[in-house]
Amino acid sequence: PLVNYVDHGGNSTPIDVPANDSVMEGAIANGVEGIVAECGGSAMCATCHVYVREEFLALLPPMGEVEDTMLDLTASERRDNSRLSCQIRMSDALDGLTVEMPEAQT
Ligand code: FES
Image (tube, rainbow, N blue to C red):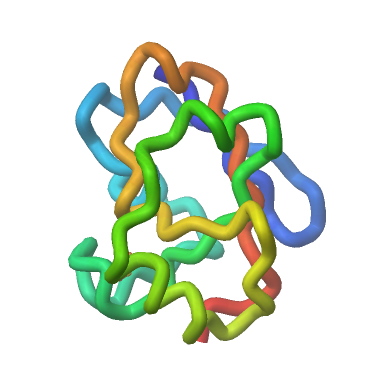
């Protein structure tokens, strides 16, 4: 399924991310800048913070307690559509998912 990674300048990079891989893994595997992922996907670093395009929010898995806590520690401001991209696994239902990278991750 396709993920559109939108950088802070508004440029969109569409990438086909394998189902079950996380949105973070898709970015790292393809050299997408703007997602750092220091902890490697354990919801422990908050450097994979993204803003999810509103129309996809309801399709995402609910936020876990750890993710919720980590989102209070992001380098860029937390918004209502903030999520950790390592906690979003791709599926066909999420095809076309669009995420914007924040200005800074660290
Ligand atoms: Fe560290 Fe997502 S990669 S919290």
